Image (cartoon, rainbow, N blue to C red; front, side, top):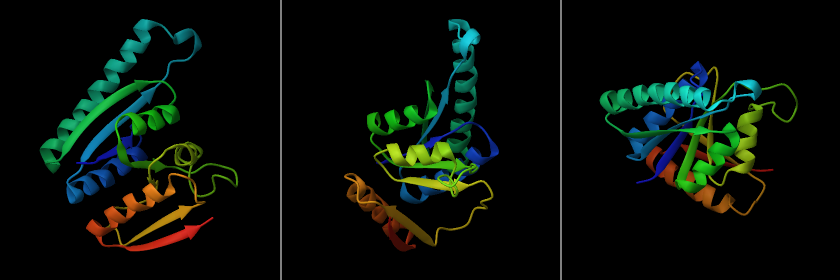
Length: 179
């Protein structure tokens, strides 16, 4: 069984990505891993504050996980990580043998992040597995097309293979873009 990772900040956008990932997990019979990375800044960084944030995060993740298991009948687990969200995602992908990351994006200013937000853009550039990006205005529909963009980096062949495996199950049209 493969793992699909959903990084959450509990925004509406990340919940849309979670809904989409739950659909994928149900269709592919994979398992879902929910993850939230948290930080505490400067003067507020005390052990008690960090533990309080972790407890609150775990309660939210537990509630979401229990709801998905009960309502969607899927395999779901969660973890909360202290640290930078981007680094936490990259580390979780490597440690947990994640085959796909599904994350929401709100977009950002600037040419580089014209189509995806800066956090999402950084995750795409640093992770070793495919990242499926769910835009903030997305309304759920069946997957009909998958686009794979590549610059021919070392891990791209494995990522393309994982996307094709997903395509075999969902039967969309596949498109390849070489950058």
